[in-house]
Length: 75
Image (cartoon, one colour):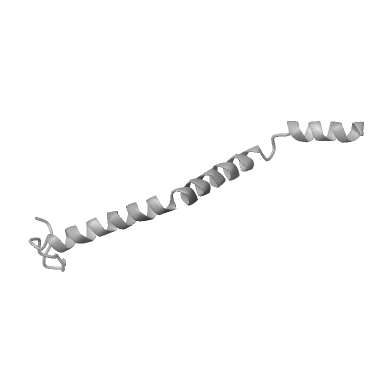
């Protein structure tokens, strides 16, 4: 029993895998946050893409530019 307690204490004091454990905990927290706020994140992203799409459709005053070897798109 004493050997088992000593082994447990030495295992607790070792810090070899501490960096890996910290990274795994950070990833787990980020995944949990993403799961909790997934509806909000998805709606925010869809609104962002929708706004960008409508801005592109409404801004027809700018002619598209396709540069060629003889022309440039510089204003």
